[in-house]
Image (cartoon, rainbow, N blue to C red; front, side, top):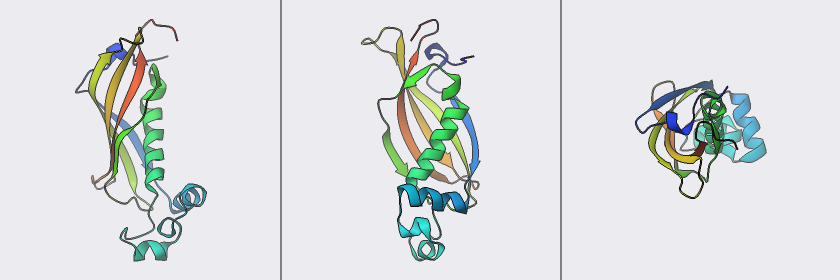
Length: 151
């Protein structure tokens, strides 16, 4: 059952979206498939880099964040998609063994004049590691149906 419709989302609301622990094996697997740079594939290369160790690709971190967003919020909402992501910033490396936690804030909400029955919210997402350090941030607009509107 859908829990969150556009009417339920107001600027200033926060949602804790869960945690995820990153493993060495998945860092290497993701990098082999999508971002085969040496510091994502090899511990020695990672230690020799500015990243300080075998580091997850930023795209891997973004994918983990998306997973937590989907499981912790979107899959329980009337979200109909997003026109894109604004200002994605990787602030610190994510290393094997890091446990990531994602927090989302609703920063704005407005009805869509061009699409009756829909509203647009803007979300600010912040991904932190187990020490509380921010590793990634991004802003994400998304469209939600109003309660009672069929899609």
